[in-house]
Length: 284
DNA sequence: AGGGATCCCTGTACGC
DNA sequence: TGCGTACAGGGATCCC
Image (tube, rainbow, N blue to C red):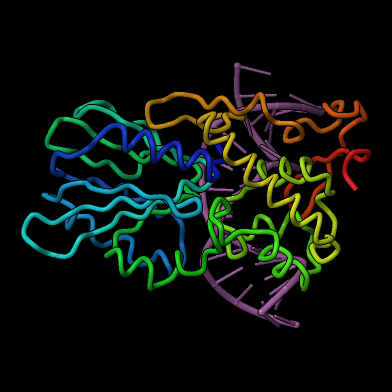
C-alpha cells in the first residue's frame, strides 16, 4: 500500500524538477504488462518511440496526475508523458545499467547516464503519451474537478456541488470530478478537522460546515506537501525518501485508538468498500 | 445526471 | 513452514 494522493504526487514532481533533467532521451523501455485498462488509456501502447531524442522539459501536476513534457529537437509538436501512480506506483531515479526493480513498467534512459523508472506492482497506475493539447482535450484531464488549493475551490463551490448529492460526504470528496487530488487519507483527515462525520449525506452539510471543510482540506494538503507526503507504509519519493506527514495523521489508520482531541475511541466504518475512521464525539 | 456495483491487481496479514 | 484466503483501495466503466 502506497496511497499517493495530491501531496505525494506533488512531492514526486518536485523531486523530479530538482533533479533537473535536461539531457535528451536515449531510449525508452516499456514492459509487456497492461496497466490501467480503458478507452482513455487505449492509445497507451503507442508513442513511446517518439520520445527518443527529445529533451525533457516542464513537469506539472494535475490532481493525482503527473505531466512531463518532452520537446522535439526538430521542430515537431511537444509530447507529454501522462502518469498516474494508482495505488502502488513509484517513480525511481536510477543510473543507466542499474538493475530494474520487480514490476518496473517504464524505463527512460537519458544521454547523461541517468534513468527514470516507473514501478507499479498492482498495476493500478497508468501511462500515456500524447500531445499536451490531446491530454487536455481528449478525456482524463478534462473531467477533473478544480485543484483543491486553487481559488476555484471555495466554500460556495463545494456547497453548490454537495447540495444535490445524497452520497456520503467522504465519497464525494474522493470523486475526482468534484475536486481533484484527494484520496482516502486526506479525506478522512479533513473531515475530522472540520468535525463532520464521513457518512453524512453530502447535502446535509451546512454552509458553515462547507466552509470549515474547504479550509481544512487546504490546510491539511498544504501541511502534507510541506512535510513531503505521508508514508503510511510504502510511499517513497523518486530518491527513495519517506514523507514526514504520518505523524500529523489524527484518524487515518487509527481506528479503535483514542481520539487525539477528546480521548474517545475512534470508530471505523466501511463506505463503498473503503474504510473511514472518525471520532464519534468530536465529529457531528 | 447521480449512484451503485464490478473489475482491475499483488503484497501483506492471518488462520490453520 | 507453507498453503489458502481475505483484504486493501483509485478510478474507469457499465447499468439503472
